[in-house]
Image (cartoon, rainbow, N blue to C red; front, side, top):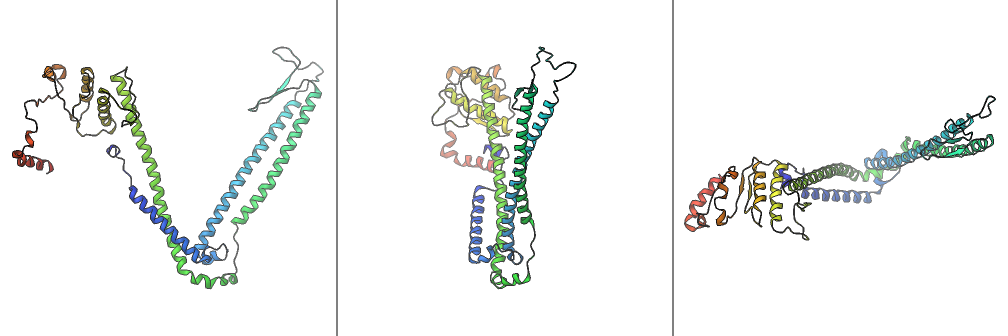
Length: 376
């Protein structure tokens, strides 16, 4: 009801959803039965795709699945090749940078400007940084040779991937190619397909219906997920606001609301139950913006203190809705709501009324007349 007030409605109900699922199951079963009875409709022979709508769809779907799998393999191989190519290029760049450090200068030598040391090193700019000494020509030569070996490894790996790519691309080309079918090969299956003509038409009809129902069920699931997300958001907002308002009313309070209903393992004692209920009624209006009257019977029950009572009355007075609170006053409290501090309350005293008086038999007819006025 809460979500309904917020305008959340399912496009189809759960009963209709189950009904459509049952119909889908029955259609799937009928299709499988027809394909089992007329195996030629389920044949993978390419000639049959020219004569049978069912066979054409089945072969197309199978072919499409194969194309998608091969495409995925090609994509992964391309990624792997690019990674190896990137590593190879980084190695080549490293060799160029190391070779550029020519320390055998006639007029001097390379030194560190920070400390004056003639010992220098090379530090990579990759994510996994590493550095090595390149002070002497011999050390630089060994390092360059090591990197060149690494480049050769990357080149071999790239070549291996290229061969795999060529194989997969050949497979993909074959899958996407169109083979001509001779008239003779078509005539071989003519009689068998003629006997299965009615079944072929029925399978086509079933496929159309199955597609329609699957679309309905998919839309239902999407709508349901969206609604569940919206409902969760509304619930979270309600609980968040309940806790926020509670802390404003009672900064030292220890209550924490994580559900709209009390759990079996926990109960609110004393005035906590009244606070919990009043907070819900207040926050429901803030979140849903409903215009309905808010009625709370015995709103001071469970020993709600006068201070908390006043805070809640002031809180509900901020709402534009009609607020109807009932309570039983002690003798010493009679006239309490006539004081100036409660001037915003329209206080009605029913203490002079006889309890259950209107329910006596002699008032039954007049009471029914009043009820009819409300119904009309």
